[in-house]
Image (cartoon, rainbow, N blue to C red):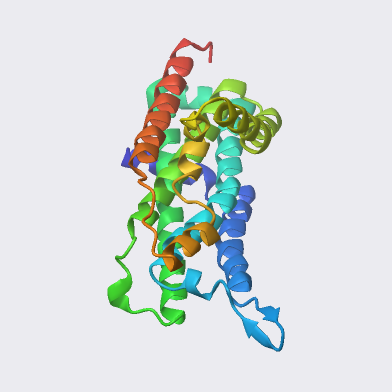
Length: 262
């Protein structure tokens, strides 16, 4: 896997689009959260920062994870572009001519998904550490609710894995990106609403992307539960379902690649 990733890196390290989309994630995530954390809501003659607690330990992990789940779309688009470019420029066939098997090509892309997710999670940790300490937190509080950093990793793999699956299926960047946005923003929201409306078990929460979204709910909801000292909902089922969807993407993409005419 290391050699496959090394070759992938050689392909993309001089690719401007790669650095632009990575830059969007790196710059916008801390900048967006800085603006929120410093925003003041006036109440009469006083000013109260209602979100200040969300940027102290331990709430900072879930808070940053939620906002990062929005910006992870840049990485999803990157996966789509890098994968579909292989088909548009026929470099996938060149890889096979140079000695790769189809599975090596596929696992190089899977490795890219995991590597990007790990890098994004590490960056989230560093940003969260800075925000948490800047808001009066202690280094001993870092590990509290630290599992939410792991939830973000699962969410990243879920979104990027879904993007990879669409890329292998459609093979056209414009169509794949369009379908990604259409499904993630509109179709899945409609399906979730309809399923949860018809069923008491809220099975709509277990749809492919929604299952990982449930791991990192809107920060004010978690903050209010924390203030009211209410116990957090169990995330075990969402973790299991998210991993199941990731495995489905992997095996479906593998099967599709083996059966395609290349």
